Image (spheres, rainbow, N blue to C red):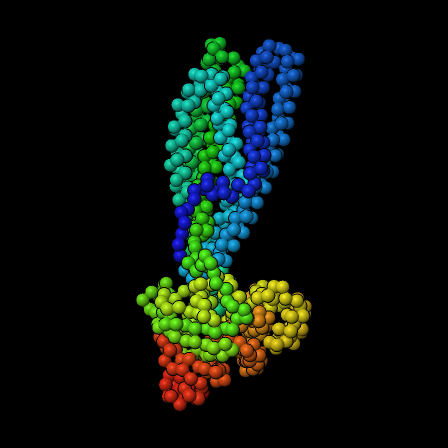
Length: 582
């Protein structure tokens, strides 16, 4: 797997917001108007005190208050426009990001997911994107608004009293230092907190998925204790982060408002000495409070931005992951019609997690069009690896694999897989209806075609007995069906796909005798006129195969039909004697 450089938070936000630049501009204009209106309130306050109250001019007071009401109305309208648009942007960007991440996940090979955890991926797709939504839809707008008020307030402070403003600026370093110090701690703790949440998600997903095993072995108390430990770890990390943010806010507020009290003491003496007017001091205090509030808000938002930076890094790491199993610049398509000849030519492969333990070594196998070949052997012999390589979930490190004479690495993986149907050992049923489960390989298939496929798979009878028939909701992982019923739905899916190459991974291993009889009958119809590779542990199910290939430690050690292999007296004969004698 390769990775691209991670973009910064600012660059990532720019990329996300670029398609909606008009709405960003509208929100920006509203933000500037609201900030200017807020600054204008201070000047209105100064005029009310100096020319209204102090001068005793009632008419001037009326006009000034009316003008201030107009400014406040403008402030309200601009605030509404800003709030609506930035909230819309937050929701829109989050939806786009979730779709982008999910789309990217579908391009990663199974090997990537084997090295990670589902719960962590779900956490990144939900919790981290929610953090970015909060930033774009709220925190970023608050930060920009307060930055404008801070700059505008400082300008108005200088125009009101240079002496008092210099005193205010002298205290700025006292505020900036804790922001930087605590901000770094908050960012580090934010990543830790998000990692702990991912641990929780992984544990929940694993426990709920395997709830039957958990309860069957009475493991509930231990799982409760383990989950409590993870919850407390998450809480401790969050508590440390909250403590750092709280100290940051407290430090800024104490320093800033302490400075305002000091300025009021100095300014009050200047008013008494006649160096400034009461209106100027009032306006100065108003702007000083605005600057202080802005800095306090920025210090608080800074913590959110640090958390968002951590979330963005995690998401960008996900988006930066790349699959090495990509389509070549000029992929070669299989000739039509596809004959289905499969050839492994001295293929060698070791899984990335076990590089010193080859799963296949100098593996040579050719399967003719329409031939049924069974792969048998002990666990770890390499049978499943043959399927993984043929589906191009991995590429061999040596040798090559061909279909109809074309190497797989010269094809587009998606186009390649459109010619292969898979019936796994554990039937995969999705949380949707019967019809949609069967349609999974051909979403455009009609209901009549779905019914025909189910009839061929001996599934139509039990489907019709379900309360809603083909519209029956099967629940998560098909919990409403028996094992044999799930397997027949999976076979119906493969029948409907109608692909020239068929891979069967021990499709009857966990079934009762009646279900096995029906599934085996369905498989016989499915295998007809198709190139079929069958992984089998139960040798009784493959006695009619055209050829049986016996594997051990990634090598082919025997080849022949059932009778020939029995007569050879090798590994197959040994396995057969164990099973058939039992």
